[in-house]
Image (cartoon, rainbow, N blue to C red; front, side):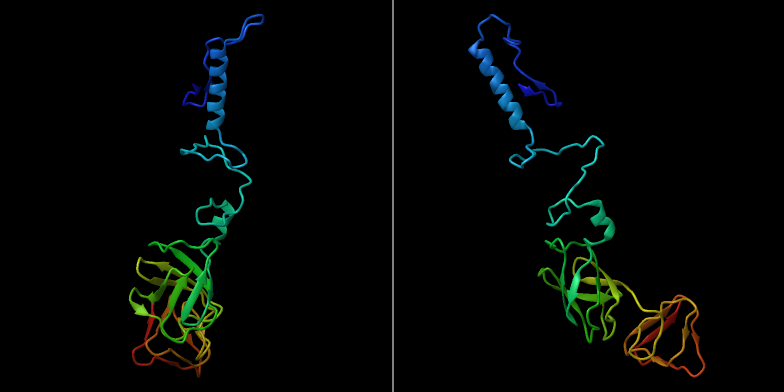
Length: 230
């Protein structure tokens, strides 16, 4: 009989309990040992010999002192989730980017969000291949390929996988226009352009507020580029 399905261990009551001065029935004894063996075989051993065969309700209690997850099938510590380390990839390359994630990514999934620090400023269109799962284009504005300088060395980039390619949704910049070769997108409110700046051909520049252009500074918008103040 062993466990009754609600966590209560039961044994065959025939011949139990044993009464002093009486002969122990082999049938009762064997039934007892069978129940004990069945019950022990249902438990989870601490050395990992047995594994659960169903979901384990925790009754509102926590799993504590859990080791950090390493494989994709491991449980994660809360600290791993809070730190964002499960989404931060180490990237190498200039235009053909190779990324590694810990734990290793098993497959791309729509909605995957990743961040990385740009290792080298890109010089043309960009692809990203994470953990050997295949190179995917990195786009912006849904369909636009990246232009030279869109990913600047040292900046933090956030991309999301849309089921087909990676969409660039965030780029960290260093604080406003710095002249040719500097930042490629204006994002600061009320910033001042102190040095001459040429927006790269076919690139977009955007501001969330007014931009003051200092005396003598020149901002050039080449054909095919856009400067928008929102």
